[in-house]
Amino acid sequence: MINKVLERVKKLLTADPTIKFLELLDDETLPSNSDAVFIIAQYDAAMEQYKGKHYRYESGIGDHWFTA
Image (cartoon, rainbow, N blue to C red; front, side):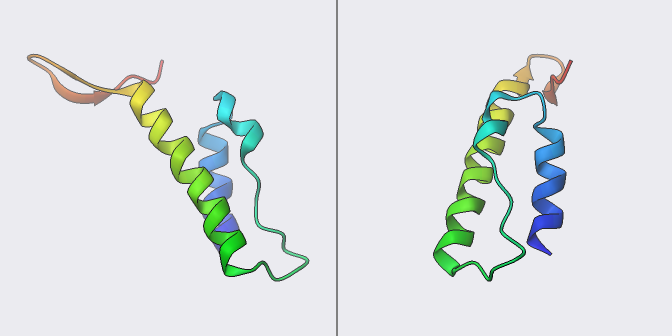
């Protein structure tokens, strides 16, 4: 279930340099809670970095995404 969400995030971040550090949870073995938290934290950091690059405030327009 978690991998389904992580796959969607990874697809969004395809062109971002952080993609090389993002891995999915291993389906073959049951990951420990600490492994799952670590991987999710990596995705969270990558998404925060992506937002910092592409989400801004402009006077007269307000908050919006710059993804082009």
